[in-house]
Length: 531
Image 1 (cartoon, rainbow, N blue to C red):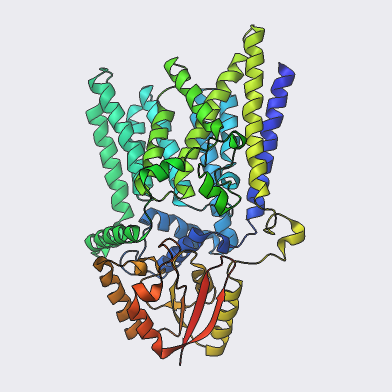
Image 2 (image 1 turned 90 degrees about the vertical axis):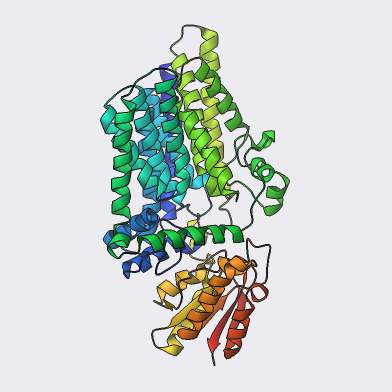
């Protein structure tokens, strides 16, 4: 068995090497490949100018997201390379926190957790995630780690305080974090009342509430000092609701179909493993049968008291996070991906411990399943890497000849920037890709409104009229030198912007089209300049 254990660790080293190599390769990639990364950089860029989110610019991102990105840009720099490093740091922090969470099971489980979590970037997304999910997941794992400590009655006061801190930080990254910490506190209440297991809960709950409130006050301190707190909260809430309503909402059945893929050939598929839109339409499930199998085995282990409740609380919180957002985006499934990874780790750890059994049959079964899980992860990695064939991103021969997502946008805006030879006033009306924001930051253009993207203007209800009126007022008071727009919406069932926002079409009568073109994303763009 010693030789087999050496083989197991060799497998883990292979998985980690491929994952780390992927992360290393991603450091050279432009932010243009990751839509939300551009927005994250833009919000931190505006904050650096002493502009407050929800007051001076609209965003659905909450303050902690903006502060963390701004702080990183402040100390390291706001380059593509620095943000790629930050993206990878979140994955490494997730792996480290998972390592400590699994220490209660075994050192083997800890090492495996560290390695498996490193596969998130290559498994989950094509071009680096840089999503809020990768940020708050670190605090979720720290939260269930403290939860376990409380269940074992270790340093109760400390871990109740930490729960409040983790809740505050994760909630103000994304409010769906309320599910995880809500379930944790509800379960502690259940233990206190039904099971008569006492944690000095009422007294310690006050510590959690106080730590949550103290961190929250610090988070909103810039707004409080400027006496803009109420306005900021109101603006964010209304903008979030209105923006959310302008996007396509998926039904419960559609969301459910997007979770499990029941085809045997996809038993170990990457989370974002679709090779085409047609394949996605045929079978949209993102998790293979491996995930179902590991979940069922973990349930058996739970009832046999081999594992505790914490991973299942993570699992149900992840489901709530996914369903309540009602969009079905792949990154909404990152927490669920982590839950399934944890189930696989629980199974792997159980079978690894079975190697100590004298029974030859049990040993043979354990060897089989250990190989099964390790090979499954290797297959996931292999299928993930195949998605990069032809992109020019993962081959030294083709990297320099790759086509950037905003090649033409950069070219034409650079031409205009040189012709105008002044501080350019700019406004974009993009929906899906926000690639012009990347160019506008590159050339230091000044946005003339509070709107960095155009989703909201595709809304057809009267609730969107106030945003359209505000935009026209901004354009009129501070006419932009350049207007860039993509007339068709990406998530708005291909609505025409000029039909949903005819006031914009009227305003642009004073402008002429400089270029009409389409980028790598196949979206049609038009650049307008003043006569």
